[in-house]
Amino acid sequence: MVALDYGRRRIGVAISDPGRILASPHGAIEHRGPAGEPPDGLLALLHRLEPAEVLVGIPFNMDGSAGEMALEARRFASGLRAVLGIPVVERDERLSSLEADRRLSESGLPRGRRREKGRRDMLAAAVLLEDYLAES
Image (cartoon, rainbow, N blue to C red):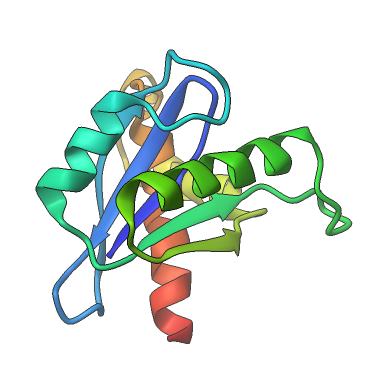
């Protein structure tokens, strides 16, 4: 399984082990194309990884409503469904970035290394995937 933390600049990627027990950060893909459309680099990665299912985080507002980014992430998930032909699951990811920030703060990495491009994004994807696997 692959989890994606959608963003306008980068998309965080996390993967599970075959037994769907562990979630690991895998990387981040630059997103330079139109908002809501899956970038070619991500599609190529997904074809290489051959997941049975893709999990997409939807950043709902704290009150549960769907703002602009949530709607954009849903368009992104819909685009993946159309291209991949495998299940694409949408999941509320409201607090995954905050948890990723907390983990980075506790990591012991020097401040500059914590902010390297994509580190937060792929960690947020891993948090999303961990939560999903724990509930499955």
